[in-house]
Amino acid sequence: MATVGELLSSGTARLRAAGSESARLDAELLLGWAIGAERTGLIAHPEGPVGTDAAAAYDGAVVRREAGEPVAYIRGLKEFYGLALAVDSRALIPRPETELLVAEAEREIAWRLTSAPRPAGTPKLRVVDVGTGSGAIAIALATLLRRRRMLPEVSILAVDCSAEALVLARENAAGHSVADAVAFDTADLLPAAEQPFDLILANLPYIPSAEVDRLPVAASFEPRTALDGGPDGLAVIRRLLAALPSALAPEGTALLEIGFDQGSAVERAVAGLPGGWSCRNQPDLSGRPRLAHVERAANPERTTGAR
Picture 1 (cartoon, helix red, strand yellow):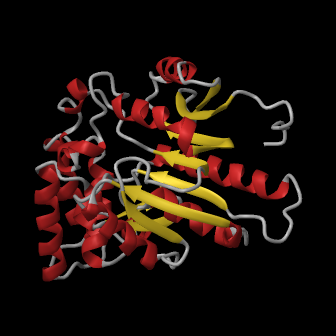
Picture 2 (cartoon, rainbow, N blue to C red; picture 1 turned 135 degrees about the vertical axis):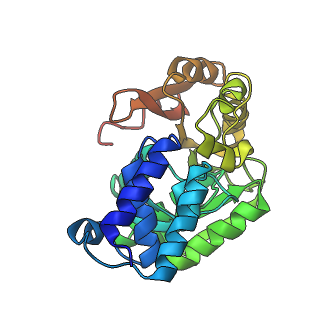
């Protein structure tokens, strides 16, 4: 019977030979999945025996990873903002950099709910997550707001053009007990709405078409429509920006994840919107532009310094 250490060693060697840049981590995650244990347990007990069935499941997982399939799809889950989300080929795998969008959305909502008194009968803040995919952004945000007891004052809608992705998103919402707090709808970008949104969130495809085929092989397992942003990567984002004058409330904010080299181009696109708009690009932890904050030109009656 093989031990944990032996299987990790052989799996790491196979994955490194296949071109994985995170071979050891991949092997640990896959073995942990196969035997139902945490990575820390594997590392602490390399002498532990691994049963025949678990070893076979691990070997099958390594074969799939050798072919380039993402570890998240093999395991069927991905950690995002402290949540374990179900993932598969119906939707893009949530990326760590998208957690910045969730954090800023929470901060924006908290500011709006606490910066001024909200008399009884004040309408809920209307929030929409455009291109929700697995539901990661909407579900993480709903979970955060529930912990802060702010969720009753917020209405969250998550939309996607893929009906299959929305099935996955609903499953994740139910799995994290926020199915009652997030509504889902099929729409090409923004849904038809009687009222504008206070906060529009979007992680839309922003990779230039020519670069999609040059991505690591793991990306080929994900929906191309969730990656391909057109010739310069901003085709879908520009469509959303064009809809903001009618879809965003007068003092609303749109938070859009962008590519690290697209900050200036997004600023120019926002400057071309009718009525006067502003765009502030927020850097990620590496100091590169990652999140565009888009609003109408400053309202003299609005104080934003507290945000």
